[in-house]
Length: 242
Image (cartoon, rainbow, N blue to C red):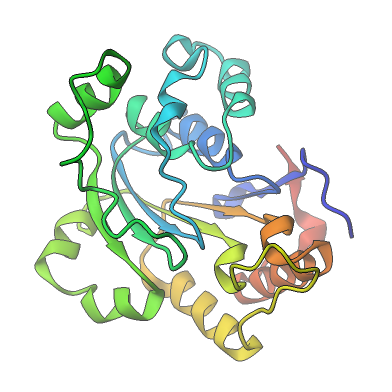
């Protein structure tokens, strides 16, 4: 199937929200927080080929004027696929992030030593950091994280009541957007990784981005989504638009 950019389905009884583009994850987090289904300052575990840690989402129009659910969707629609995490810190939906991401050249997304935080445009970032928010860890793959998940620094981030799994299906694809064909992980490895993620923690909320472009096209994306639904025990015919 071809996934339109506005494709969004959910399984509300399982707290699982799926969208073509990743910026809509912000809407799911914010709506759940405002509905009292997610306590503020949750920990996000972001499993993705990319970090998606661009800070300028803090500048999106209306972020700090959200009143109605319609406002949430308007803000999410104005975000991009790589800048939706910082805004969720700005609204208090999350405050800690564990990145599991293999394809960024950024070694440590929490190293701000070279950032000019005194520049006026960096004021919202500085306020967040001065408030002790946006702290976390970065791992290069799920296997590395599993090796460290029981260490004190990980437990300090995960021993809290609300944990969000944020998965981009392009995690299972090579970073190669110049060619028509993008190679995927071996199917059994994908299934094993998905099973690990399913059982890793008692998730309060799960958001999934399909990202067909970065998966190598709609066919690859449909295949990966099918594996996700199978492992998580979801029947696509029982989904709802959101």
